[in-house]
Amino acid sequence: MLKQVVVSAIQPTGRLHVGNYVGAIAEWVRMQDEYDCFFPLVDLHALTVRHDPADLRQRCYDFVALYVACGIDPAKSVVFAQSHVPAHSELQWVLTCFATLGELSRMTQFKAKSDGKGGSVNAGLYLYPVLMASDILLYKTDRVPVGADQKQHLELARDLAIRFNATYGDVFHVPEPMIPKLGARIMSLQDPESKMSKSDKLDKNVLALLDDPEAVRSKLARAVTDSLSHVAYNPARPGISNLVSLYSALAGMEHDAVEKHYAGVGYGRFKSDLADIVNETLAPVRERYAAIRSDEAGLDRILAEGAAKAGRRANATLEEVYDRLGLIPAAQRTQVWA
Image 1 (cartoon, rainbow, N blue to C red):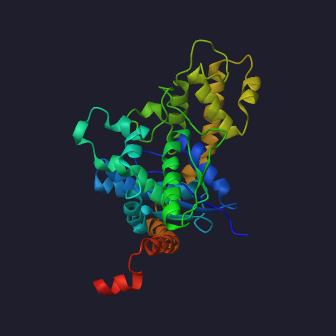
Image 2: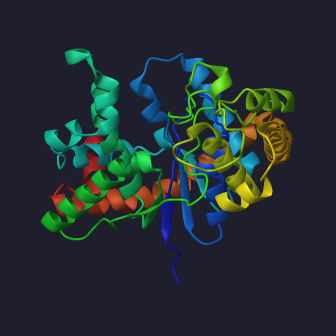
Image 3: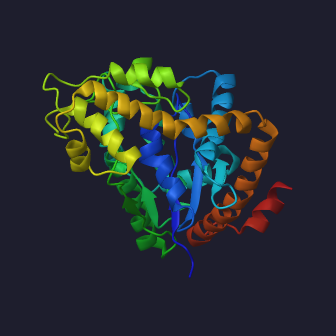
């Protein structure tokens, strides 16, 4: 039987952190044998903000190296740069013609990022969800690992797939969400009402995958909790609940099991033990990363092989879309430009 297709991606901005690991990358690693996995590095999405070109290029390599260091196997999964497969941008234009101004204007992230900017808001932020839909639908994706904050974007991809299929015949699969039960949403260490962010300017808010052991221990020791001093998972207590959620994800324990294990134990011991678990998890990642990142030619090979595999699947879907739309077949279009 053919495996179901899974597509999941992270934008190469900021620093990968433990929230990315437990909410995405660790899940990717577990999926590799069960699903046909595509993990694009969505570098085109990073262009919605002004950036230093050299920094972006190096960060892209950093992210790919961390993917592999965390256990993503390029022999099992397709790892590639979004910009290396032009079909992503080509399908985006087609899908833009099926999206409405109303549904794009209602996107929560667009509204948050454009608030107060008036007519000066970057149009890329507005069309960002359509490119995301293209990333997903190109591969006839069955399932998408997604956090609660990204469900709206997946709903748009589903709507566009249904809209196209209803008009021109079935081409796209309508993808279903996959939401991890544990560790799907790790929050900022100092502001546990906000999600831990790769782009956070305050280092103390984020446990980066490449933080050294003492930095991890220091950040967790200073992490916001409350004055109650007993370990529990309770949405009304976001600080300690965030740390319990992280512990649960890394130790593979349910929240109530963590509570029972630390009954009668104060925050100091709990935070120290959590630091040990984080460092035990990240130590082999840091070690593998150092060797992988130093071989940039090897990373280029991974990306080239991944782009070739992704390109074959993506181009087949794009040609099917163009054919349904009545565009001239590819061979003839090539001759026009010869």
